[in-house]
Amino acid sequence: MKKTLTLVFFYVATLSGIAQEEKETNLIADGNELHQEEAYAQAEGEYRKALSINSINPKAQHNLGNALYRSKDFDQANQRFFETQKNSLNKADKHLAFHNMGNGFMQQKAYKKAVEAYKNALRNNPTDEETRYNFALAKELLEKQKEEEEQQDQDQDQDQDQQDDQEKKEDDSEGDKKEKPSDEGEDGDEKEDKKDQEEKDDKGKDDKEKDDPKKPKENKKEGDQKQPPPPRKPGQISPEQVKSLLEAMNQQEKNVQDKVNAEKVQGVPVKTKKDW
Image (cartoon, rainbow, N blue to C red; front, side, top):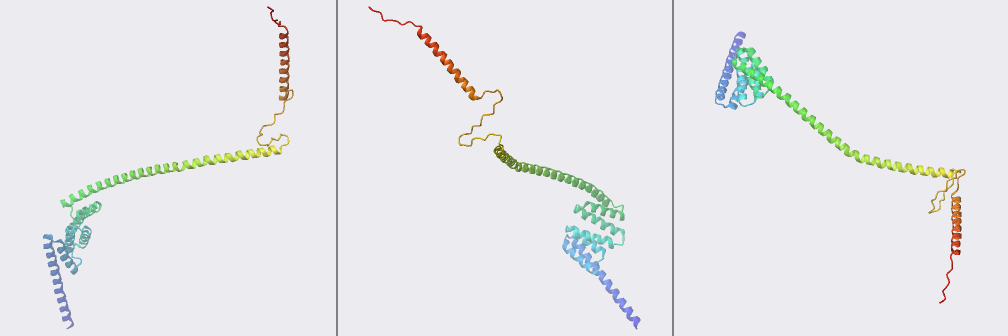
């Protein structure tokens, strides 16, 4: 009796599995019809229903990837193609999955990833000419992309250098403007310091003159700023003596002139008045 129950259970499980497979197949077929009608969102719904029954069905995954690709959801499409190649048991299905994955990367201009995807597709089918053409095109676009990026980096570096030079010039200019008042201030400080030093020197000189008993003191009366006469050298005539000699010479010359004039007066004959 126990053995009979086991056989019955196995029979029921088999029937259930067949029903699930038929349902998967019908859902995928419905999705394919909607896909051909370009009703990609509805087709996506049918493929997802099939995957809810069997999440590793490579046909449902591949066709869902196609529907997402047509809807321009390239990230989600490539995830489905990746799952397809992982769960596929034959090289033909793997080749198609990698090929479509490369197409998705090409749409995103991810040329490096596209090159790798097409390379994997060719490993599974080296004779496919379309994959080979796409592989060559992806490599060419990748090289061009690298050149453009290098040129862009050079342009950015050049722009940055120019910007740095301009900022440096502006900083230098601002620095010069700031230094000018500072220089004037330093000149003013130097003048003030020089003036203070001169005043200190004059004060020190006055103090020294006050303390020096050998030097004659200046007359500090208001309005009298004459300096005392310098000491005479030995044998040198003093100004007073010079003045006295000049006065004596002038007086002597005057006396001589007076005498000469007196003699002229005495020698002139006196005219008399004529009597008529």
